[in-house]
Image (spheres, one colour):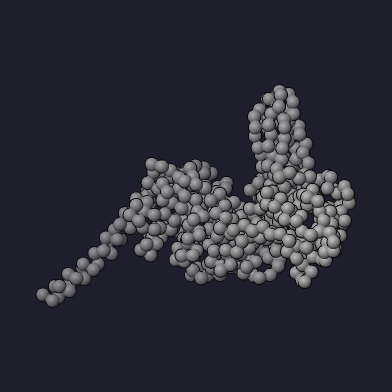
Length: 486
């Protein structure tokens, strides 16, 4: 009898495991069927799913296959940055005076010190100028300097494509950014056959506008806004038919010069005069002498802080993840390098060292992957679904990291890049918090979801060589719906 009871107890103890294995097999079969039915012809996909509630793998399909992550690379940057104690330090842009003030004159120089704030706007610039103009001087005997010593002079990420210029999603990187380093060109029609009204923001004499538009004249062809980017020119050519109000956005060369030219211009308009500037230097976009120079600030007893603008780190992170903003990702990436390397100028490899350390900390070998930039624009990035899920698991296990990351992720059917996916009436509505990633041939989705019964899952789906983004998204959405119904 005792032997029989022991055998019975052993069988009962094994029953939950057998049931779990049976359920896992059923789930795997259903997910495999979905992939077989919906994977676009000629493409392939790597998938990893981890049950965070039960703390065990749930489903793998080519989970170690290396893939280009596109903007899911932002998960890597965000989680690594959030793991740093100094993450919550705001992004700062400051104005300093260095010299001696006598009467109404600063016998010395002005410095604008860049902290790579990607959310710094024209309105913020006006506030910074106004605060500077409230100082005790109205005349500067020296120069107006921009301090961009935070990072190196490379204004693109490793592997970024030159012919994506002048797209707004690929701005020139600098510690001094104004309106994300882009210009918004707006047009409004006038009477038929007449030139349209063209306005550009932010307002500045750094660029010029050649208006060749015609209002309500179809024969003029479609509206086109361009600049000779191969010559690094900021002469904007606006041409074609304007039948209604429209806007175009393009980057400007270069971000740090755009910032400093506009700052010096507005400072002069506020009544602060720099004796080193020729009287006509602000009157043309290509002045004989620039109204500024670049040099690092020496912080000694002669240096006085005049004005500061600070942007919360969470605001930068939210825009980076919700709207997949490449500039914000690179700002977080380079600041990560600055915080971990503690030197100037910081380089991409300083940030990548921190990423590789975290990969090693979660038990994976960083040598198995290729890392190039912080936003995923680079074609040199190669990650795996298992790596992304490993980082998502790390974030989930660290409350301070997870709470800020989860808040920043797009929500299915609600906001960000998932606003129009898995919407009302679908099982996954509001249950998926994940980062999208896409460019030609690449479509990925990685993040968290909650099942109907409340279990937490981390997942990564990396579609490669898929020319139909619509079909790739349909597969990803179907997989998420299936997991929600787990």
